[in-house]
Structures are given as structure tokens and as C-alpha cells.
Image (cartoon, rainbow, N blue to C red; front, side):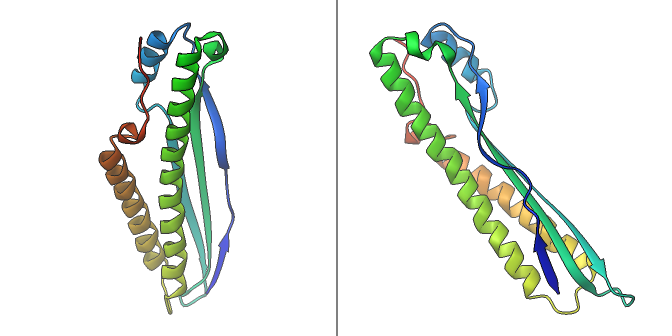
Length: 160
């Protein structure tokens, strides 16, 4: 069986703007979001089969995006606030990269799982793809739970 990987988006630099004048307002805006940073992913798959229904080619299309905050008023903040923001931002970036690592590791296992199939039908590919997506979601959830969405690793801001 032939496996093709056609990468979609691989963006680790997406941004959203925090439109706040001071750190207290920035924290309120960040807290109003689901998460301060975000890792999003997708894996799509298609397959081709011979007349007997045996899969001959699988095309995987994975994609991911890391979205981080940008704060235009950052430059006008006191040095202590700037330093705190920088520490938080770096910790948040490390946290989101942790999500990416977990995604890529499980995606690699999906490829190996498909490679190990013999005389696979389309339903076999669907089962493996769905299983991979479910496991990725569970690993991401556990990672966020373990790190309190990165807060235990420095994703915090102090409001003076």
C-alpha cells in the first residue's frame, strides 16, 4: 500500500491581538478566551482501492496552527510588566509547542499503523484515522489538565 502525506497548514506563528491599554485589561481579555494560546490540528484522509476493495493508496492531509497573543500596548508598559509578559509568552509558546509535539508523535504512529496493514479495506483506514484523532484529543486534554493549560509552567501574568 502506498501512503502519501500532503501537509496542509503548518503555522506556528498565527496571532490574535490583545487590545488592552494595561496589564489588568490584558488579563481580562485573555481570560475571556477559551485559552491564552491555542493549538489546533486536523488530519484528513482519503484512500483508493482496487476492484476487490483492497486499499492501494492512502493520502493523509495533516495540518496544525499555533495561535499566540500579541499585545500592541506592550512597548508602553513598565519594565516589570514587559518582563512578566515576556516570561508568560515564552512559557505559553513552550506549552503550545508541547501540544504540537504530541500531535506529531501520534501522527507518526498513524502512518506506521497504516503501513502495517495487509489487504486493508477502506473501513480499516477509517478506524485507524478515527482512533488516532481520538487519542490525540485525549492526549491534548490530559496535557492541559496536567499543566493547568500551562499555568503550572509559567503561563500567568501578575496584575500590580
